[in-house]
Image (tube, rainbow, N blue to C red):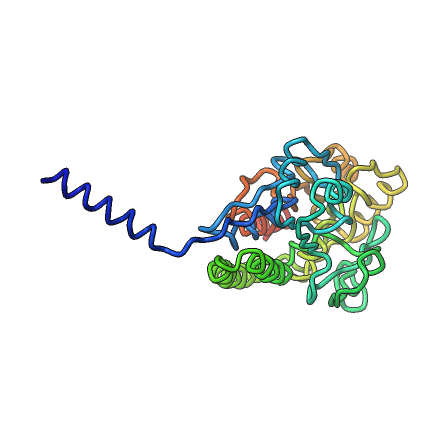
Length: 321
């Protein structure tokens, strides 16, 4: 009798499953870097898993495509990337390996806040009422990519308000590809937006005690985070993380540290830490580590909030909050 009951139950379950409307194949989604992958994974929760290209501790500034990456692109329905300003390694492969895939280029999103790249090694601490050169903001209206983004900072995900725009655009792109899953994508997006709002409020409270303390970063990756939370970065060691700074630049940074009493100089996990020791030599500045891409975090939905919380904790720890 027990076996018969079990057989009846299994038969009923299979019959019910067969009666459900068939869901079209879930789109194959490829994402360039960890923070964006985390946001996309949150939108796809319970429906599918996006594929990540730049894994582990690799940097998009110096990444080299692998055969497995080319294969993933060749079957992709949707590719989500920041744009050629950040992932220059993807420009040619997108044309060669994914000519039919839809591209969601995040630097082109309408309503995104974009900030101009800062020049030189030492920035003015107060410029037109904004700290660290936060005075140049653009509400992108969808103009020509090359013209619009020539001098813009591409680390857009470090502002939770931009993350909101990324989540919303991803949900709509997926809904267009997969109408059967549209409700799930939009429900997931709404949940993620609520989580981003809570995270934003949490970070504002956590960083308020250190907003007036000057610091130096390894490269200009944090401008969106600084602008969002009114932080006081005064310079970067390198213009580009894949090029060693000149002796003149290092001297200018050291002078800035001493002149403004910069409390901390931050290294990054995947780049040369000896440069940080060089610029703090003879100053009272402490050293810390900031990771703008989550290189040491496991990929997935929880990476994005963990990444931003880790940035806030590192800043508070080194700046003395």
